[in-house]
Image 1 (tube, rainbow, N blue to C red):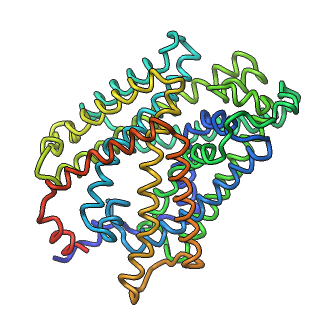
Image 2 (image 1 turned 90 degrees about the vertical axis):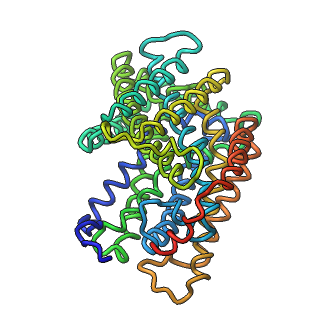
Length: 448
């Protein structure tokens, strides 16, 4: 059957458009929370900044690899499709299970904890305040999405501008008020148990979203030539923003001050602009966090819907509510898992860190699998004309895979019980592979 070209993505994005979209996808609320954890795992200020620069380089290498995969295998399924093409449906379904129970739900809980940390500054509710706010936010936004109210593009653009504006405020106030309460030089001594691997987990979490940027190839003008320009320019902008923001934090709070803070942006603004500055930046971050949380809930439930369509059991998760035009059952299941994770995180010293620890080993395992899939697909189709080829193959993807392997090792070694829990949940999903639909293999073959 010939598909109407109008039903396919059409090239309509300029390089400028794509760079703006990429920066908007990556710049999130993580930068307002992760610096304290990164600082706690490095021994000096120069190592703190170097970690953010190195994270940008890793982001660039990974994005170039994803650019080849997405240009050669355009599909709405993203990594699910790459893994299916390279390793078969079983591996893709295991990835889907991981997204449903660990990666996406853990991300929802992590964002909710950031929201809770900043709301607790405005209206404290005691030691469990951040968890209470996090649970309430997940419950309310899940209910909103079940009803069928989804976020609009204009709202997301406004919130992205708020996020970037908050980062810009940190940079400007930091460099124009460098006489603030920086910690003395002795504070830069390495803390006990400092681990660069753990620091990089949170640096690369903050850079997260670059893989979504590679999906713009279907709508980018002259994508084979322009995708590399988009990725290089976007990454350089991100590295500049993040490095300058962290230099600003260092100039005001010092390394020890960053280590001791659960809300670095608010603490810095209070130091340079008083209570009014603290409240202003906190409100901006709360707005951004609510939008990010809503977007994560909105997109995450679609994974439950897709998984249910690939299995002969739990078909109720694939029910699409026609009235609200939402995967209602998937949203409820996703919300329940996220609330359970928030409950577990409430009894840890840092709920946000616990959620990142929970997701990190599983996330890096599958990112490694995606990196290796580039080699697999090249070998399987040696004569295929690729719209875009990653430069310096095989060195570039090899570097990316080695970095993913190192991050997988670091996340297993340094995340402790929470990371092992994530791996256990992943393993618990393997019996579901016995219930995958056998006709899917033939269907996938005909659509490729």
